[in-house]
Amino acid sequence: MKNTVITFMEAKKKGIKQTMLTAYDYSTAKLIDEAGINAILVGDSLGNVMLGYEDTISVTMEDMIHHGAAVSRGAKNALVVIDMPFMSYQTSVYDAVTNAGRLMKEGRCQAVKLEGGKEVCPQIKAITDAGIPVMAHLGLTPQHINAFGGFKVQGKDEAAARKLIEDAKAVEEAGAFSVVLECVPAKLAEMVTKELNIPTVGIGAGAGCDGQVLVYQDLLGMFSDFTPKFVKRFAEVGEVMKEAFRKYDEEVKAGSYPAEEHTFAIKDEVLEKLY
Image 1 (tube, one colour):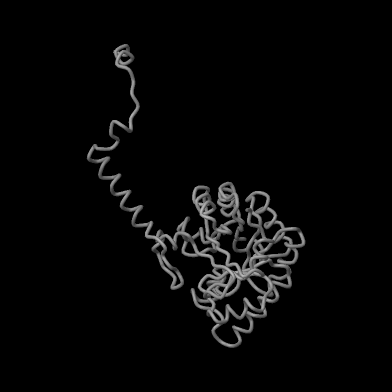
Image 2 (cartoon, helix red, strand yellow):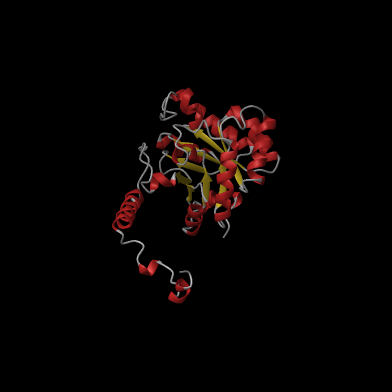
């Protein structure tokens, strides 16, 4: 069954946890989709794991459209959400709607995601009024990493926790169909989840959220530049890949690959005519 923003919200009412993983290409999206994952996030995390940037700030609209379109071609049942990159929506409501529209039309997604609370509610309302579903993102918002002074847990003191709750209610009121809570204390995330009618998706926010999201390279042990505390490696695919690459290198240099079964034949009489 095709996952939509409606099925995503209905799952909260039924108490059914939803799963989301990142993807940035057709082949990976196809595998994730076939595994039954409910939603795929084409995250601006591609700046880190695909493009080698130190942060997500340098990711462009063209990057998101390029990778988003590839993912959308591979996902038949998963809900595809594309991140709005840094400065594609902060500058004005007009820019936000225009760029969200590009992600929908050119990236072929079913929803967009943007970071921020009350300050971006005008953008959320305008985008949703244009018929584009919005997933909000609170807590540790990577596009604000320079303002935060690094990757730090958010909402730990009373003022910050109160602001998080207020922001969550504000984005819901503005029309967001869901909200990601990143690097938030588990008990606070659970409190926010109970306060909202829309589903929460946690990443480093405990099991009390309505769903979970992870970067697939973290989950598979494919990205080793840094590993957040909240990541669980469900497989060491990175090690399997490196071993396969080593074996390929060895066999090519030893002359054992390609073997006869990997080659194509030609009749001797054809070759004789070439002399």
